[in-house]
Amino acid sequence: MGRQFRFYILPSDAEALISELRLHSGLKLIQETSPTFTPIEVASPVQNAPRFFGVFGLRDASSVRCYLASANSAEIKMLYYPTRSEWLVQEESEVIEFSGCEYDGDGLLQIGRMYFQSDVLIGDTVWRKRKEFTDWASKIFRTAKKSMRYSESLQAYVGREADNWQKNGGRFIALFRSDGAPVDANY
View 1 (cartoon, rainbow, N blue to C red):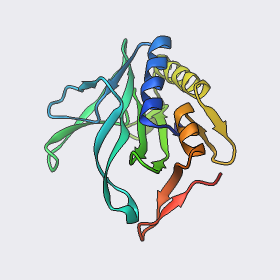
View 2 (cartoon, one colour):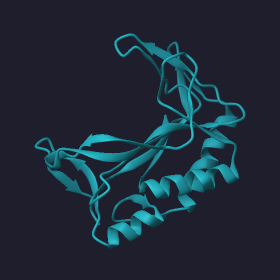
View 3 (cartoon, helix red, strand yellow):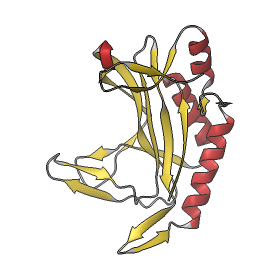
């Protein structure tokens, strides 16, 4: 079983959110992949790289892509993928996925999410993750949600900067159709 919430945040909102979360909880950011079995800490949740934006093609963009982990006691499990020649953080880990929010720097912003699994499959039995982790993750969710405005029409939270950006002509995108056309979020 997992828990998640969705949001629209710009890179500046993501940085502000991480700063806020660090004030209220011991937190480290973990990169999705590593060349070794040791997780890599990163300073920022924001990555910059070309992304495919449907009919708009490949564009320089930023996105949020990392895991949040307790700085004190997170159990992080890595698994080697030979076809990729790298190690990846596994969902069984005590981490919160922080992802999405592809932003082209111009007029398009895709939805993002925070997600964590509250249990893990061991053999053929489902076990709850440690209470320390689920309590910590719940605190992160509460703090993150308080820093954003909830939009009933979007069924998602909206960061302060993203809210202003959208009011000035930015487009919140839910997804891209198979023909590459963007699907605006309902608002």
